[in-house]
Image (cartoon, rainbow, N blue to C red; front, side):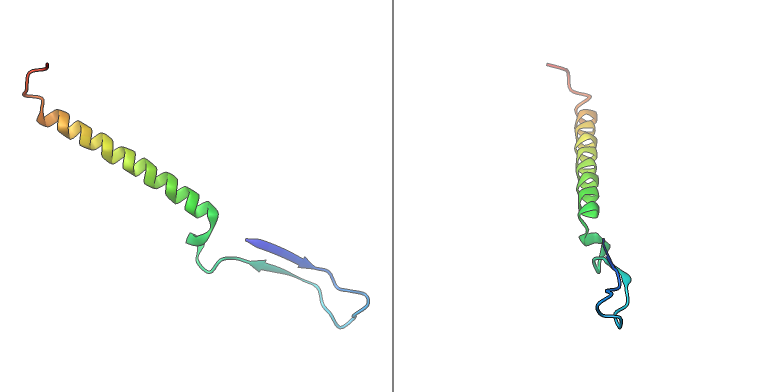
Length: 66
């Protein structure tokens, strides 16, 4: 988000000051959300790899170790 504060100008008395907030239309476009989403995807990928490795070990458990 971007915050802009505009103070009234003495030269132009008809102007008014104010505070403006500019934000993306979609929060998923923010860099913070994208970074968080990337971390979650990486964790999910690691979890799936671990589960896959454990499943392979379980299937091969009847084989004698070499």
